[in-house]
Image (tube, rainbow, N blue to C red; front, side):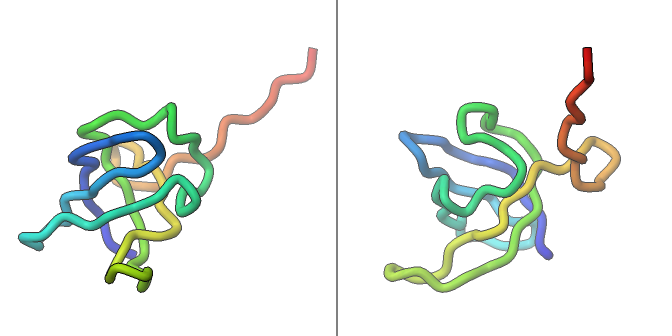
Length: 80
């Protein structure tokens, strides 16, 4: 699992600046896990795997990372 920061977002896709890498990595809304695209913001920390897409490497299994460095747990629903 690699980590990085969301650099840009645009209409269902975006780019992640990878820690220790020069080139940003593409991701698509279909590669998100446990988060909706509309909840992402530029600057958010994420973890991901690198997969191979039709146009080259891309990020898959993209998850938000909590400030402490661990993956954020999905919010639990509260029963009324």
